[in-house]
Amino acid sequence: MNFRVGDAQDSAVLIEERLVTELGRDSVFRSSTGITPGTAFEPRLIEAASTCEVMLVVIGPRWLTITKGGVPSIKAPADWVRMEIEFALHNNAKVIPILVGDISMPSKDELPDTISELAGRQYIRLHHRSSRYSLDQIADSVRALVTANNGVLPPPPAQVTMLTSLGTTSRSADIKLCGANVNGRHYSESIVYRCTDFATAVRGRVGFDLGRRFRSFKTTAGVLDDAVEGGQTGIFQVIGDGIMLAEHTASQGKPCVIDLNVSTVLRLELVAYRPGTTEHPMLAGVMAISGRSNKLPELAWANPTLYA
Image (cartoon, rainbow, N blue to C red; front, top):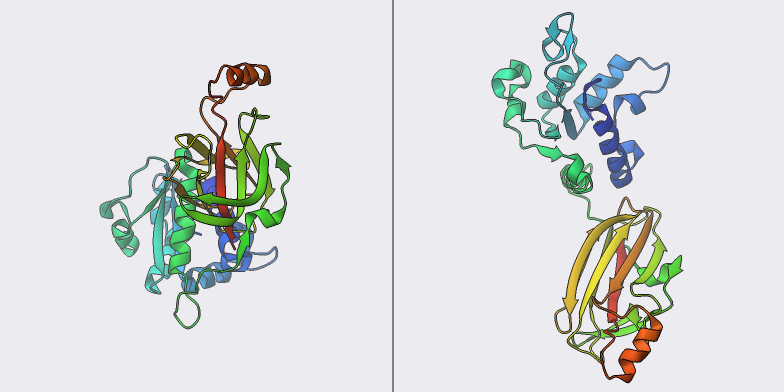
């Protein structure tokens, strides 16, 4: 991690935390956390910059304009930001600029000659409006570039866990963990949200503790094949730590596949509902007696799976 003090160091911390989750503490170096008290920092910085496989250069709005003794820091004789980039480029590390916010990539003319090639490197943008997506993109890009000692990309972990095996932390009354038939296929481990006479809750919710132990979540979401009202539409939402991660719509015969990165998620909540479901039980009774539909949901999260 290469960054300038006084410019986007908070972004560098966010990126570090995400990469530590992805790669482990020992695989990520940032000077503020990677140098223990009492250690000579210059040799450690040189070693880290000279031996890294990937260097992320975090560039914020003041990266070029901060001065030292009246001279732009980037051009000062002992500027460690520039020097680290020089070491990494000299040793053929994969150097990725990370542009914070709406700033533009520095041009070749704005950079010292020793690091001018940085201007031609493909960058990744980290923006507060899409920070989760940006951090996922950074983590995926770094992992794809990091190689094992023999130069072969290590395969992603293949451990598989059924979400239903974790046990629920919360569950709506109409939610059941059982088999389900969706689009002509039977899924033995499913989360089914089905109401019969009336909806105890208009939205079916079920929660699980992931504890940041899994990389991705995948499921097929759809309307049950044996739904009484087959023409219905279901809305499926995935929420991680209170933040909406995805929302999809499915109908009978047209399920959707949901595939998400959940490596930073502590608590996962799945929400499913059918638009227009009658909310009040008494009104539901009146509707049923009069032969009108209460639009009761008959939906399933089929084989919800976690990958380590």
